[in-house]
Length: 314
Ligand code: SF4
Ligand code: SF4
Ligand code: SF4
Image 1 (cartoon, rainbow, N blue to C red):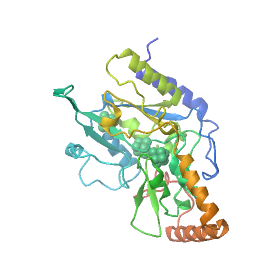
Image 2: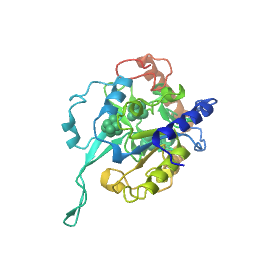
Image 3: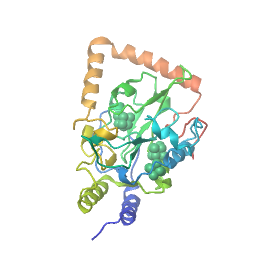
C-alpha cells in the first residue's frame, strides 16, 4: 500500500491520541533516566523546502520573540548562514550546490530548517547540574528557567551548538532554544512551524512511523535522496530527523558519532564533584544563587513554554 504523506499524518494523529494519555513530565533531569522509547518527532524533507521563512515567523509569533531586524518576507537574509539564537529558535539556511570537479551537478539550492534536535539522550540535560533541562517522555527537551543558575554548561555540551544565552541581566539567566512547542504537543496540536509550512516539509508523528516514511520515500524515489537519515543514529538518535538530496556535511550538519555525549559530560561532572568541590557546600552556594535569581525574576516555577520574550504563551 502506498503511504502518502497526508495519509501517514492521519495515522500518526490516531497514534497520537491514543498514546498522549499518560505522558507526564520527568521529575528531575539530573536524576539519570533511560532515554525514552518511541517518542514523537519530526521528519524534515529538505528536498521540499523553498526557503519561504514562514516557519521562522510562526515560531517567532508562537513564542512572542522579539521582532527581527529584517521582516520575514525579506529573503535576502538567506544569503548568509545563520544560527538559532535568543530571538530565533529556528532558522532556515540556503546551501548552493557544490561543484564536483568541473561539473555542477544540480542548480537548485537546498534550504534547511534548523533548530534544537531534541536528542534522545540530550547532553545539555546531562550537563545541567540543577536539572533545568529535561527530556520529556513524549519527546521535547524543555527548559525550566526557575532552576537555571546561568552556568552555561548546556551550551558547551550541546553537539549542535543550540542553547543560546540571554545576557541582558546577570541575575536573571535564561537559556533559549526550540521547545518543540511542547505544550501544543500535549494538547494534541502540531508544533507551530509544522502547522504553517505551505510545502509540508515537516511531518510530525511517532519516530518509528517517521523512520518508516523516510525509508519509503527513499525506496520509491531512486536517486533523489542520499542513503542517510540524519538523526536516526547520530549522538544516540534525535527526535528531529532529516532526509536530503545532498550529503549532510555539505548542508550544515556536523558529522557525529553514534554514541550519546552525555556519557562524557557525566564523567566530567562526577570528577568535579568527587575531587574539586564539597557537594553540600556547592549545593548551598547553588541554592543561594537560585534563590537570588528567583527573587529577581519574581516568577513562579515554570517551563520555558510559559515564559518568553514578550510575555506569556498560549
Ligand atoms: S515554512 Fe516550510 S517551505 Fe517555508 S522555509 Fe519553513 S520549512 Fe521551508
Ligand atoms: S540539540 Fe543540543 S540543546 Fe537540543 S536536545 Fe540536543 S543537546 Fe540539547
Ligand atoms: S517546534 Fe515550536 S519552538 Fe521549535 S522551531 Fe517549531 S515552532 Fe519553534
